[in-house]
Image 1: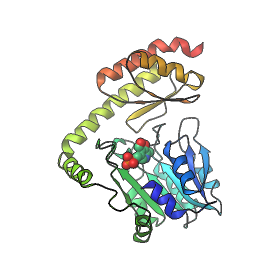
Image 2 (image 1 turned 135 degrees about the vertical axis):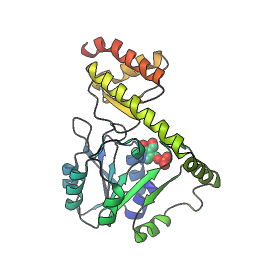
Image 3 (image 1 turned 30 degrees about the horizontal axis):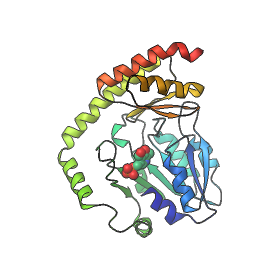
Length: 269
Ligand SMILES: Cc1ncc(COP(=O)(O)O)c(C=O)c1O
């Protein structure tokens, strides 16, 4: 869906502004459309710098991508900064809010994206069944957009891109919503335990609202990933920056905290 938006809105030479680091697919999608990526560094605590992002918009900008919660730093944008940002971005620039991890958000300051969309015609909200609904691989999600935007998106999407099987899986997931929400709630509880535990051990962990935590490890990133791998834990390293660790079953999370505790002495070395 995201690639359809970028393809529909951009021609060669146009610009797409987004935070970095963010979802790895953004630069690929932008490059494939022929547009140019304008990456605005996230703040030290892994948050979108919405002021800098608004300042990065030029006459050539067609789309701004906002990932909230941000993959991989986990942080969510807040309603007040989001409102200021939308006030600063010209109305003919599409602002895409990628809410792939929405169901895990517990931050009361997070915006109600649909309410914001109703007031701002240039806002497009993206959601997916890949994360909380566990349907990754079926590639099914949706966009909330004004009809005129939706029409141009459809023209850039392959016909029948969503299979019958994927639709049936979504319907079944909705039927099992209570069970699903219980699972998400349990994960959020574990997320708090993991985040607090890592912080107590002295790690810099941004406030996560997703189903993962981000450890800023700089030069120690790959070493940490190897230490985790050695005890059967798979983490996602981004060399020189940090690792994204998915919150899993309690036993795996405890093992992660144990690895992090043992690794502490190597942090200063
Ligand atoms: C921020 C973000 N957006 C979108 C997606 C992909 O969603 P889908 O599987 O619906 O293409 C992901 C998956 O990793 C993601 O992290």
